[in-house]
Image (cartoon, rainbow, N blue to C red):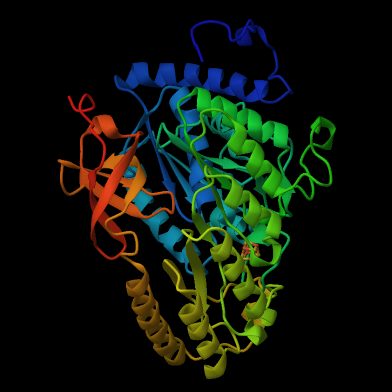
Length: 500
Ligand code: SF4
């Protein structure tokens, strides 16, 4: 955006009021903010800076890229949390103690704000969707300047402008999604060659331990046209790997955000079809997706994975528990038998697929027998990786009112589960040793400047001798050594000409 001239033929300075149409309205506020910052930078004799601190899941990480994109577009530079002029905490509320952690961080920032009178503190993300949290912040943390919700991310420039224009504490939290502007506002991507793309928002599942449906709203999908257009523009910008994001991508397409804009969408257009269409885009080499819910994982999706070599050989399929009684109490809508059947079909259709999962220990009412059913699932499936969690009581969810399992019992079960998980993982690792795998190089190795690090299609990390010119490229690597969760390898192709 050129802040010295009019924007796309529009003279913002000549406007008496901000435009009402989005995203033009946000462009207007970005333009106005730049003018505010020009003045400030002139009097301070330095550039203004920002820091976005992200907690929680991939969806939050992706929202943070949008926040950073807007701030960089306005001309701010990144800085550390304690020195930045604008600090934004993008919060997560999945765990109960997250609130206390945030309040602790705010206490520290209060001191930093005293030594930098320019510092502006903003809070956003899932925690801000909760009325009681906002009330607490309004009362106890009056030095917080801006509070906004998960559906207001695109409004960052407008909210900051309101604060700089004299409003004391700006609070703006929508309860549901409005029109979508994913495609129209700037984004600062961590990697130039890969990107997440939101395909839907919210969740309808109401697992009894989870707060997400209450804070992220009901499930709603972006139209296929909108998603495919965004991916095409990412490809034009150099992206070759896409991660399709949603709380439950398998139920994509049940309800669209903007029915009036649907051309291609129909009752039949579902996630497998979207996956096929994404793979058809020229320039896309890899497609990943997350998260999948077992109850919605269809045979058509397994077919789509099997038939599209561009779909990564990776499936994260949270099982949460191995006992039917606990799965029912969790409101997960599948049985262990159904889950095992899906795993069997997946392995039969896509033999090299890497399967990972989430497991929760100590859900209210979990007996020793229930727990042993969970251990049994780990035994039977043979996961590539298991993300284990201790159940965390989350007020506002039905499970918080159920009878809790004593802490010492949970701790003992958790340790036993970890032991089983590492035994099983040890059986699986190394199965690709001495084979050649295509690796997308992501970074220089942080411990050895002669090495690079990248990921196989099934998401396994690989380290090998390389140089920065390899970053963003697909390189065939012979996997020579297995190191638990990663491999050491050596390039299998002649890479002369890549190095400096
Ligand atoms: S599927 Fe369940 S665990 Fe996942 S976001 Fe929805 S309610 Fe939460």
